Length: 88
Image 1 (tube, rainbow, N blue to C red):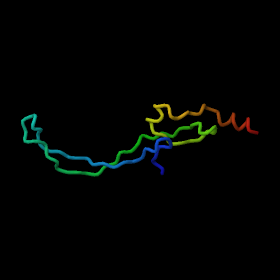
Image 2: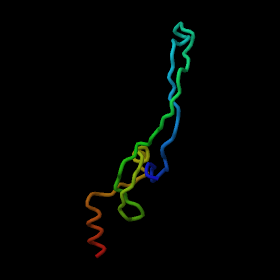
Image 3: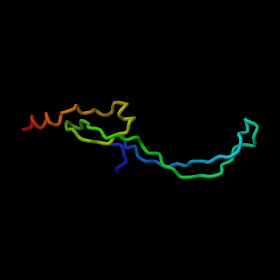
Image 4: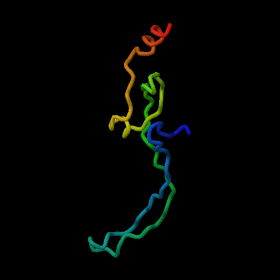
């Protein structure tokens, strides 16, 4: 799937947005009433990253929570050229 993290599999989820009307009971009102419900999507914050995957450098889409947790080993700059030179 295009909009999915390559590490943890986090992808688009669905939820509901509620529109409320009226003052809360704690503020002296009669309570907030739901006046409308709308569907919405929650999308993961995906970044394109050059990562070292099983000894090869690949571009993968990874969520920022996996990046900050250190689950992805980012490839060093210029590493593809060095590996191609060593392979030949």
